[in-house]
Image (cartoon, rainbow, N blue to C red):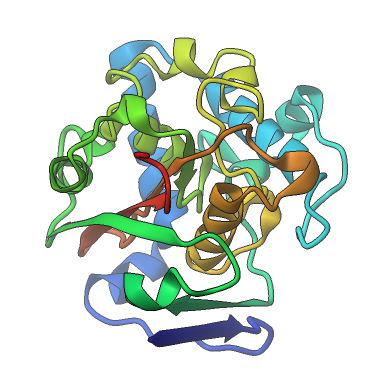
Length: 277
């Protein structure tokens, strides 16, 4: 049995920079928001998308957070609020980028022999995918090819497809990262996020692909994806009350990280213990 506990209190914390980040910082090119802003510029130019899709993701995340008593941001948010939000890194605004928050989470893993004797329904790890690259992918930033390779590993190892996924939990440090997960993990084709997201209902609790049902990093709180896993397990066990997705059996967590010097992506597929019964 393995227990993993993690917490953070960003107030007063210091971040040490190295490599290319030292030089990026003095020119304002710092953290994922800068890279994702540039990526979305390229995406808009290539596919004719706009910031409206990003706004729908931010608004839907807040709607989910409003149903989560542990969420950091629960105040109502609509598209008018999003459009009025202050610019941050063009074309992104403040509501496109998550805020630091203090929080903690714990995850306990055990063999299937031990888990089956526990009081609650077991949740199984079906597969894991991981890929990285050491340089920013010039020309097509939104393609994030390591993310696509991680997705292939994930699906092939589990023997399932995107159509089998009931709930999606992308690492939404920005709204752009959520769109990248939709496109690169096969839920829609590149450039089709505008139609897929629509008015936001498709990624809502009763939609085709509920996404970040706890509010994600954008509204639920930032804890490097751990709260995503906690919510994923709770969804698969049916423990989420008002924000419960009906008959959720398979869930996918998709991370994305790094900035100019390195990009890395990791993903996990989890399922109810009786998902294929």
